[in-house]
Length: 361
Image (cartoon, rainbow, N blue to C red):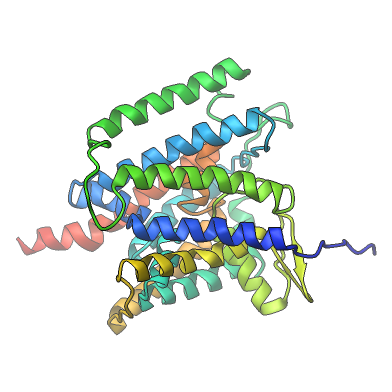
């Protein structure tokens, strides 16, 4: 049996991963950006501030990453469409992030602030993502992903623009329509009214988050092994737990490299740097402190994170992996998974917060 040669991790591999992950953590903390809150606030307190920030980040990421792709500087690879896995997995992830008190990116950056409940959520996320990707839950994962929808041409992916036709004009027409819609929606939040404040204004957070996503797409291909994987958390979480337990990241989709006797991926190193970037930001703002939670909250958070790990792997990504990175490729599977996450979030927000408040009146 021929053994695959895994390249040794280089300095630029490590440095670029740490910089991209650190920048992401710094921006998330500085902008107080969590997509669980972004989705939740729209129906719970009718506040669209963070949701507009998400849309701005998405718009920058869509335009920037597709521009680099069409200039030949990197290659975007939209995910395949697994309707059951994308929709069911996305919906369950939306439920789980409300229980966990944060999305995939949220629990990592909040850990860097000293929130112990978020650290518990990361632990549950690690356990469940690993069990789903390569462990005892993998048969269930395979069942959900047993149905796949493809185009007649296997070389093409099912994207928002391929539903309409083919060619650059159609593709960029779709992107332009999305960009205009995001711009119009964002104007209602006064994106240019940037005043003096402790953290980042919502529109600045969105722009910086989108630019970080573009840079991460490009850097992950140039220095991370030749695959533009971009920002994501669920798959790197599974890779990390595999590396910790077995010394092998066991990545099915992304290039691996070796550190001593262990194999790692660029994505898991970048993800490890997220709480480090958050920690630096929190220390500068004097917001770092160890925060405890009740036993009841810890149990709820842990159960929610277990659900997030399973559903994130099943859906093909978390709120960032699908909601930003995946949607940037205009993949139909990523778009539907993200919509399902939003509806799952709203469902749990209703039963956890809104209904109990209504019952008290």
